[in-house]
Length: 134
Image (cartoon, rainbow, N blue to C red):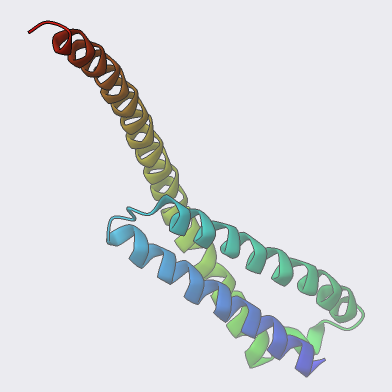
């Protein structure tokens, strides 16, 4: 059982480290939407793996949980979970805000690209017309 508890703690350490890296990316401005999306998806994957593992762990522990509640690894696991929850609560609004900003910037770029291509068509038409007159 101790090995499973160590594995669970390792999962939560990895999640916390990944979330802290995501925080650093957001602090730097996160100009790359693909990088932000990849980090968010990876964070979800890590959390899903930990959740599935913990489901099985808790079933095993439930048979005789008393000795495990006082185990240092159990306490560390709970502390890591709390840190992750706090960091997630802080990061989620920032991620959603950054995604919205990147989406708005992308829409502006698309509109600008459409406008520029419209000028190109007008420019080509004007050039063709001016060559015939001279």
